[in-house]
Length: 106
Image (tube, rainbow, N blue to C red; front, side, top):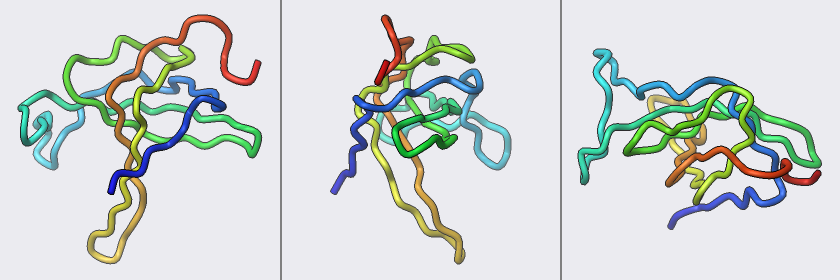
């Protein structure tokens, strides 16, 4: 089952430029089924309950966003994980693009 996050009422801002998502050896990861290169973009998500910094992974072309851009996030998926006694939530999206107009909720 896929868990999607509704970002329509959230303000998403790029807080770091997109970077290659690397493995433990420093090589850029690629999607298993497609071979598309993977990218990590740190963002700040703000809604009526406050804000949180998360990292969103995308695959394909490097997102053309920069620090400070308000973002449109296509199909944000939350992926729970657990490894070696640690756990958390990873985030993945189909795309990240600069949002035109005013930020959500404004």
